[in-house]
Image (cartoon, rainbow, N blue to C red; front, side, top):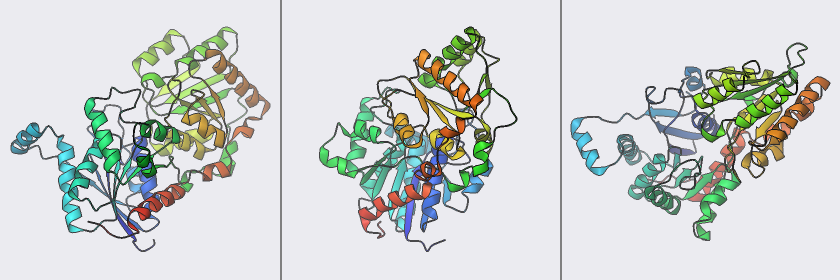
Length: 411
């Protein structure tokens, strides 16, 4: 490893062993930064399994990054005296505890930068408090989703207030898509936009399937096997896919199997049963990342589902996971979306999530290509894969940090 050139303090509510998109993506980014000479200390939480019943943990995932960066689990002090004090201040217990822990570290050790990762956006509230106490310390606020503009949330007046404070006070802002950056920054002075950057999700070289695995279709099975990994929730549940498969079934067309690995909401499962598609669609519980990667490399097509909308600014992190697997991608996404932008770079099929006819036609085309042996022409290329390497993302983020403090330590 190179000599330490930068010392970075990061705040992220979710980190390994938690198997969550954010914990995986942040670990990849910070791991690559560590490989380029950074000393990184991450303050994180202990996720309550009772509060998040679909949550799974993976010790192997944590072990993968054990020597990349230091992780400290911050547990709030639930003592009666502190509890009463915090009740008056209305500040969340974890936020208070992290601020106290971080302040102690910053007073003892010079740091190059502070990075706060949302979600939750309370991580940025921690950044706000630390920035006010340590004004010379460069602060990077990393957004995974829009905050006050999230169409799937109900932003409060406080959300709007805190977002504005974050964007005004942070030395740099990082968004995962150009569409998200434009959506959020359109409300603010143009001068503030100079501090906004786009840093897409990333993958690691070790996750890229070997070339021979790109053609690993088991046996001579003529059926088309489509795989989706990750939870199905809210408006992203692919009802349009169910109705498209039902339409094909009524036409007497079979040969398409869809597997969902992850938690599915009861409403989706009920609709699946109502459509009598249990012989075509299979659902199973979440699996650790390594097991998901194996399944992805064996599937014919990998599926991603966005919610219906005139425009979707979100870029599902599973897209770069799929990219590493090297299999063709099918996206149910609006025509105007970050997912469509991604597919324009790496290749794949797409159809609007509510357009049953378009989905059915796409499925027919994919099934025909499978049987003709031409699906491999849709696989992403090594060039496409290397566009999203973690090392590239780390280079860009370190460049942003260097521009803020010229590589010096700040307290």
